[in-house]
Image (cartoon, rainbow, N blue to C red):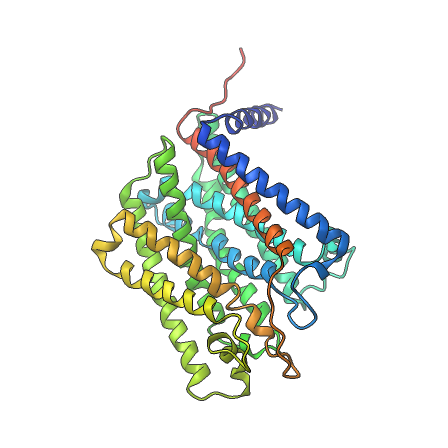
Length: 407
């Protein structure tokens, strides 16, 4: 009963903290709410008229939704780059940032699930994925493995920070014996969610663009570049607008992770390009479409070459320590990397896998305004959730939110 009272008090105090703030905070939350409402309106149109209102078709059946889902799986997995040094290696420099990283992982996973629901057409078909009710088809279907690892990772990233914050809310010290095993499991689970998602694409024999042994490792490399890059940008905002001060050396250590991962990602990209174009076969047509166009169809050319240019520029700049330790340059490079990998891992990975089709027909894909509206709404929802989680966590960490015992 006492724990329920404390939990109830925590919920009330969190709601009180997250519904109050500066003018900038209220404007931020108001803008996110407006974008979510626009997204809900677009989604209502999709529910009413079906997936025909999107740019997807029977030739290109995965588009903007699955592109964002794939990218966000990597953002979620990137939290492990803070969890492992903090909880497992006992690196105190990461301690302040780890809860922010886990909050970002929770928001990213919720967005992942939202994009899957949007891509399925609506929530009414989700019962097919419920074991015992629908046709779950475990362990034969890779999709069921993906459902399990995503929901399991979401549970880990909710439960570990919740336990730590719940104890600190009461003024108590968290017991490492309780959360360390979960932290170690989350490290392994983070790798699993990305590899399983990669296997989901690799297992489709009729899509040679994805039949690449480097797909899983490159998923991880790009994730550990884009995810920590976003974490750095979020920490920069927190440093500027809250009393929760993140040490510069913490940001520099995360920047080193971003740099190494970005360098590995570039090396793997070069390896893939060599494999596709040194001795091309008819299986290289998807890659030709992506990088050079095919039969006059060039919709993705400006996207992919912009992404590669941004990726190379950011990686080269981050490689030099004086530039990397200049915070303004670092933030610029992190922004470049994040956008570049979003393009590369989204449109640059998903759409070309369907072009040309099994019979050689080329049907290009272009997202509609409805798709863009739903996508922006889901991203705004993720930012809204993360803002609430971060504001609560920061309040508890700073001692502003504490359990008050009633006499």
